[in-house]
Image (cartoon, rainbow, N blue to C red; front, side):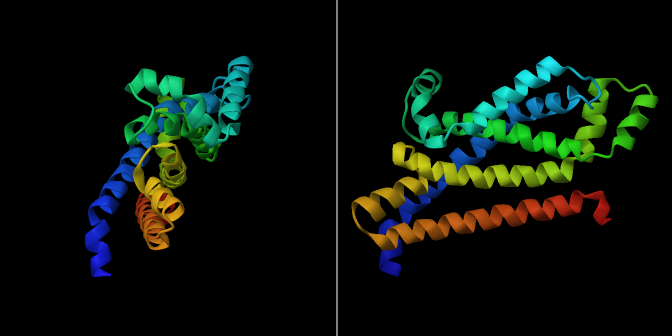
Length: 222
């Protein structure tokens, strides 16, 4: 075991770093895009605070199309865009582009679902006090939905860990790339299973961390 660790330590550490880089960077960028989309979907819904059927329908269609494209197809389809943005099509930094595009529609739907769970009475109370749509979204909907948003952040991050492993087959690096190169191409099952264990540990730590944060923030638990 010690000999195995000494032989593959640097490679596994680098793979773990690349996986975490791809995952968290793409999660952040996905929320930068998906959060306002989700908020807009709720605001412009037929029962929202500013119903706009046409805009809501267009955004809904775009989000649904984005969620329907398999990631293995998406990562190839956006290679020209990836090259344009980061100057190359392989490596962990390049993988952030397709990972973000894949996750943004997913994030938008989760944000939409989280905001729809907010008590309508709270929103009505804000309206009667003269709050604008922006104020309602910023000071009522988002703060009230924070526990659900945190759990959604956890789900997105864990999903992107799986996507990053798939991206390893296309030269993205990370633990997925190590598992494919050593487990499949070189028939070194021990290396492959170590990468699996590392991914499982990362997922469990993320899940526990966000769950604890959500419970502490959730006012219903106080």
